[in-house]
Length: 325
Image 1 (cartoon, rainbow, N blue to C red):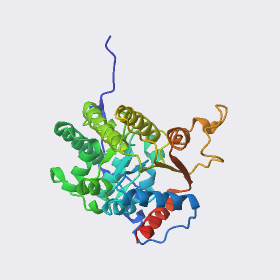
Image 2: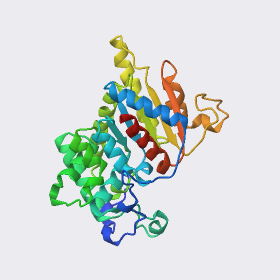
Image 3: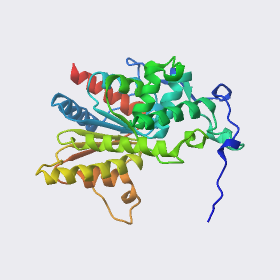
Image 4: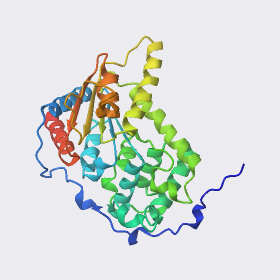
């Protein structure tokens, strides 16, 4: 049986200069910015757990959806990497795309509603060409997706200039040797639309990142796992990684049970440490069930931080910096 498929070479691809953007580098907070006030006693506890893990040389894993970056937090995350606080960063394909575009042209975030009606959405030349080229070369060099993108931006490969490289989390991670992994599925991201997209290369590099992430999770005992704004990808990748890590640890007579998890989201829970009933809508919310309940039942501790990322992340950063003295 021969099935028909879409011919990507027929797509009309436009330069980024013709696209309007809803975010620019001016929307990224300086480290000393005045940010909206936010108070949460649990957030102070999470900050203390992070400091304790950092001082003990334990893992502090930061997994996030792209919205965390889009609320202006890149400089905070980069600074925490530079201070050695964050030991592993993880995100989705959109996180890589926004970081790349901000570093390249100082702007990102197209208006989906405006561009989808005639199929312009996602069909932009530089984003599709350069990121896909980096992934293909990453596949050839047998490295991960995140490392390939970070290498592209930090080293300005293929003579591509990144005038805003200093606000790239991927470039900073590559420069500092901090693992930054990308966990994506085919068809999730605009780079997948382009004829330059090599799906085998995508699969290999994001698979490599999954194993790198699982390795960091295998060292989570005594550490902290943070999930910021990822409702599906974060909890699912973390769950599978923890199962693999515990499987190997159990064979060695070791445990991975005493660690702290924190979930950051706009949603609120009346009791985030109770799984609830299958008749409750929140029962099917993966961050609650996986990160806040099931994986910390035997010695762990969990916290849920509700609020917009333009408040919660700057406040967490300030608490950590304050504690570091």
